[in-house]
Image: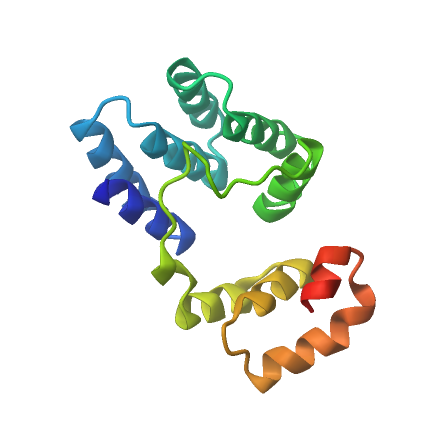
Length: 170
């Protein structure tokens, strides 16, 4: 569904208002659109609106019970409610790891992959605003043609890598 893809892309780009509008439009077309609800839950978590996130997760659970993606959302919500939230990226990594690092490539709830969301300008924007060196490293490894600046940064931070998968990628 076009609205859900646009909502996901807007969320990736940090345009939460537009993402919410597109998700709402998708739900207006199909009231129980699971991917649109998934995006709305992510938007609520990103915005720190935990009550809304909990409500959307409950709606999603009623529609698509038992999906692993729901467990991740529930753990994200629980992790974000801690006294000192770790941030969206760290909370996701913790939730994903707690659930055994499942492969989400064939998810029934996640919107379709949007190739344009990982274009060079979007990656560069994310790189510039990355809150931690781990997130910056992950982004640097996503560049199809890394610049010399990105490559040098990765080389300087190789000693800090504690994840074997990231080390191999680097």
